Length: 272
Image 1 (cartoon, rainbow, N blue to C red):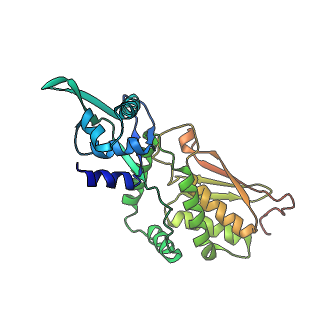
Image 2 (cartoon, rainbow, N blue to C red):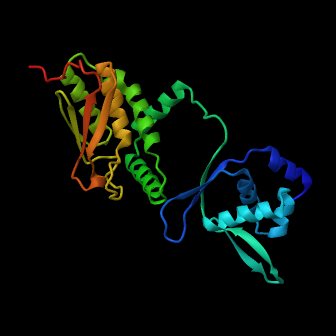
Image 3 (cartoon, rainbow, N blue to C red):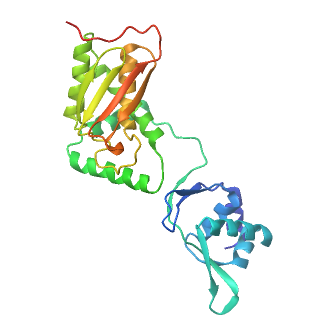
């Protein structure tokens, strides 16, 4: 690696790297240190000897030694002895890189593009493939210890905002039936909705968690986000959605409690 490449490494802020834990441990290692990220970027495609790493990073031997020791302890990097000179160590990446986070502001999609994506996802004809794809990805992330629940919740909220105008009705019973039919028509599950001071929504054959491993924790954050957005829009106030039953908790259904945060809330009840 020449000096020009060396300058490029220093000027360019490398993305945060996410590596799987190894030796049977569940979870991830997140690497943020610029020096560690520079070392890993050099080791990504090639094994390198210690002195070569020092030379190409422009850092002191003691600095590189400390960072390599930390990377070894995390199971991300390991080394072997040079077969031609056992005094030299050759370093290489031992763990799997699961992804990266660019050190930049999140990119905002145009509203119409998000609506287009949601509409096409909901109207996907090859539902079985989408179903398996979603669960394969989600199960893999759970196995690696990666929590995307907040992302799923926010995604669900946006879906709820997008479909609310299609489902709303002045008659609360019709509105509830529209939600039930939407869930059924899109293969999301069979819903029952009980109205009252606390709204209870139960889903059988739940799309979101049906094939996920039993973790003892609720998993339907996409559903919770959709429900939260729909009910908050209808009630015109903030609501709290709590999943009290879930297939991943060993239950035979998923149940959500929806509670308005406004103490002066007038309960939704079925009309005569």
